[in-house]
Image 1 (cartoon, rainbow, N blue to C red):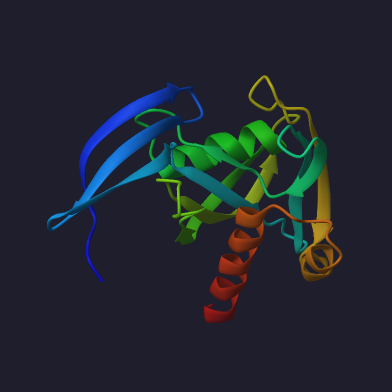
Image 2: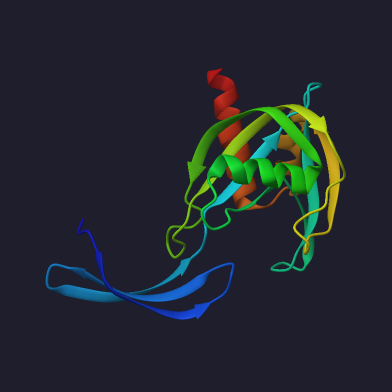
Length: 178
């Protein structure tokens, strides 16, 4: 398999969520074009309460014009490290802080055309310090769900967000190793 290296890149559109880039790629004497969405890296956090429940957020998703049930998460701000983003997202979306954070894995959301990563963390030792506020554009309803109920929520199609499902799978693998 040849390694296609970027030879040139042109930004066709820029928004705070992503940039659409046209990239010219080369492998030896061959070249081709690819469209890539260059987006910030994302984080997910599994907020695990002491009683074994997980805090989930229900929020409206404009892409599907419907609410989704998710673990808290979002994109890294410019220059922000993953841990800081996880702490910020946990507080914004749940109103909680945590004593302990642990990174449990990373996925590429869609490497066919997205140039970013999404890491998943688990937060424990939660303390409620306020109400969910979101980032200004989010309307959030907080739900505490028993950890054992998560597979059924996925199976019934109540949790459909792909990187949330991937994050919950990474969390489950982490739990099995522990």
